[in-house]
Length: 158
Image 1 (cartoon, one colour):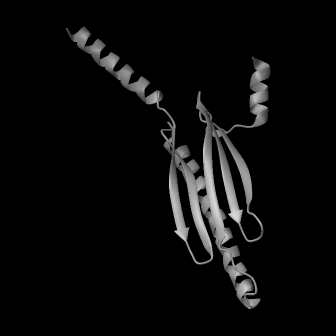
Image 2 (cartoon, rainbow, N blue to C red):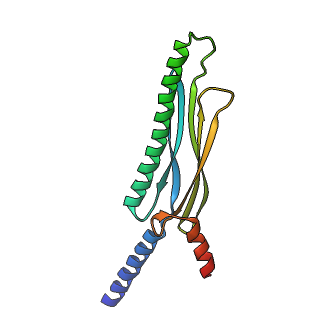
């Protein structure tokens, strides 16, 4: 009887351990919006959840948030300067409020590999705005960015 109880307890422990290691990484978004007289800000910041290393998860989320907020701060500062220049010019042309928009798209999330595309859009006057695209590729097993040479090397070894 004691052996059966011990066996049942061992099986339950194994099930608990396997469920922890089978965590699924999910990607959510933190949305930040703000409208000012001189700029409109709309940020969609990716947030990763479910990594086995909570510290790396916090590092990613914090650094991604900071990068998006730094971009918004930069556009806001440009908008204040642009509006001041417009007022000094005697307002001979209309002032169009600046825009700061970030978006992201998950391209791949399997086998402990995560790939995201970020879009940073800014309108700072003129005929049209501009978009910068940035890719983020992570090896979640190693808790590090995935580089092209890592992939090429892995393909060579196969």
